[in-house]
Image 1 (cartoon, one colour):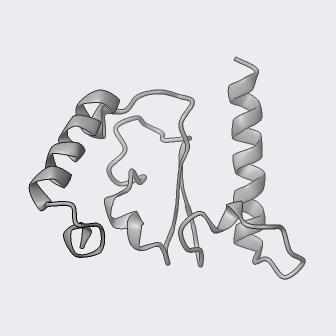
Image 2: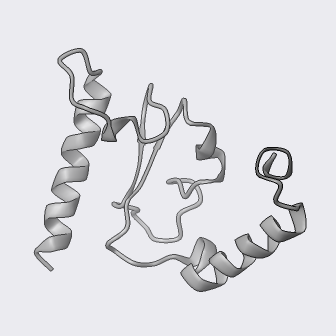
Image 3: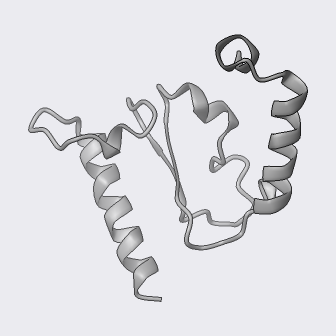
Length: 102
C-alpha cells in the first residue's frame, strides 16, 4: 500500500520498520510510561501490542476499547459518546496522572 499511495518501496518500508523496532525495542518495549490503547474496530490493532502479546504481566498499560476505531478516544467529547469511549478516556487520564507523579 505504501508503494501505491506514497511511492515508497516495500524494501524501504521494511528497513524503516526494522530500524524503528531496534530503536524502540520492538515487542520488548518495557517502559511504564507508554499506553497501548486499541479498539476492536481499529484495523491497526492487528499489529499492536495487546494483552495477548504484551511481555509485561499484568499489562496495566495495555487495554482494549470495545466498539472503537483508531484513537477515537482522542476525538472531541460528545454527549453521544459510547460508555466504552468515556471509560477509555478516564483510564487514559488516570494513567497519565500516575505517570506524571513518578
